[in-house]
Figure 1 (cartoon, rainbow, N blue to C red):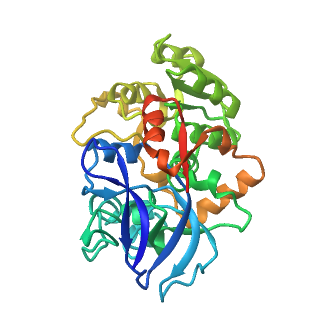
Figure 2 (figure 1 turned 135 degrees about the vertical axis):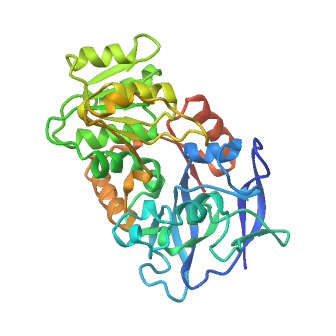
Length: 367
């Protein structure tokens, strides 16, 4: 058993509290990771607010980055001392996993979110001898150390800056993968991105790396729209000043956008995104809304070849995509620093508040 300090959420709406917990010894397909940094994602805030089903009290966090301390008997891809990024886990055996789409694993939800435990029903984390919710995205990285599913682990170069690369595991992977893997725009095609948070700005950076047409950022925060221009957007729409549907029609000459990404999870904005599509256009739905939220679409307009695509984690395969993104960052082509603000681990509640209020795009806690 290993003792460590973790940020526990006691129940819906409760703050993070810092307490000592015990970690199991890594099983044969697990590793022990000493955390260096962990990004804070809107999914973490949704769990904290009770909008996503995860057993509480529990430890969340799913953009971890750290150093391997110990490996299970069957783990060969990493060894103690390796620098790693942490992402989601998957079963490895279902059809989607075998076909290179682990984000659509048949058991993705219980393994990553709703279960709060390993597949055998046990939690790797206990407090005062009582199991607490853990294994969030196979990692539960809001702790100074974590027992992590080997499927969640991606090795990076020894010189990699984990304090900057931590968000690759979820937010950045989601934005980039949605553009590259799912929408896959052809040269010259336009893209409208609804929401200029970490995911939306990552989508803009991904599109800017391609021979894209107009890249349009839609948000209500002027500073984020300014950053979107710096990262590759060619037009911005401030929804507090203009109607986005009207503005999109003007920018595209009435033709509509070829591709759209909705990161907001707001039904009215998703409807706007779909209505703004050109004939044959595609809208990727990335934003997470609470279960049971409906959106009304014009069925006749869908007959024009318009596609609405739900996307999880950019349909990425982490062991392939994350090292490539780390390389792009090293080459100066993925300026993640522009999205990030660092916080001490003990200031996680401040980071969560700043993210909720929109003061910080991507908080990263340092251990």
